[in-house]
Length: 381
Image 1 (cartoon, one colour):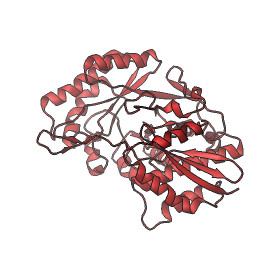
Image 2 (tube, helix red, strand yellow):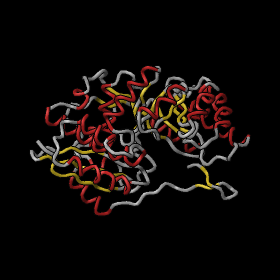
Image 3 (cartoon, rainbow, N blue to C red):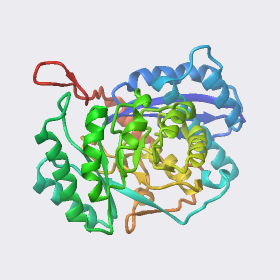
Image 4 (cartoon, rainbow, N blue to C red):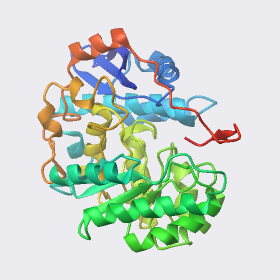
């Protein structure tokens, strides 16, 4: 069996899909994307396709090594994300060839269902409380919220109080038996992270995500040791080598994104590395159906898995949503806040190819907002 064609599809709201076709008619799907830089990743996929076309798709690890390490210049978000989507598609093909879900090929399931968390928005307290209540009524036992919007270079007393008040409100609505994760999005300084985390500790967040920017691992240990709040990071880290300094700093949760961090193959290795430091896996996934399907396959086969993010109904999904591109939306029907174990071959999701091709005719040019401070300087988004 040989790979004969690789296609990419720029689909709203902000995703990129790839389709890998073999000469025996077996097709695999992947989701290689950097949000806001999808066109650059699309070009990288087609450069890597020059190597893959004509190859046996079942030599997944060898192909991963060549695509990741066969070039003199390697790594970074664009190349790692192109590799990630192609890796997902190769695993999808392998599962379909062997007639088994990918989690079976990874050693078999270690759990019967996967706990999911849902995003909640709302900058105003009433909106936040309403959004959390809706998620509870839908059966979710965990939510994630932004700690804050744009933050000053050094937070004012009012800025800090607003963060604490939002987390306190979330805990009040959730009660003691449910969980809230707090996403800082790299918007605060290390000094402010050390100041804020002890103040929210009493509300028992499941974890504090990206309390500092990912390019400052030398500052991470002081943030981790500033409070008892578990620290999570990883959506902007792309390899096991990127994760090692964060793990050595004492983070509790690794959050590789399967569409950025080398796909299924590398995420499995990151999870295994995290076990050495007693850290848990919570894959980042505010993306489309293929990324979520790949994440779930890893979740079912990973002993130190914690919880899975999903993007159904998230605020980014304007004009199209995750379920618009799947033939059977039931595969992403969550019961009591959990996903059932997929048993279909490959990634376990059937992509509606006609819908994808129609969407690609429209395309998108999604870019993240650019925020500025009151003095006109660039602020972290």
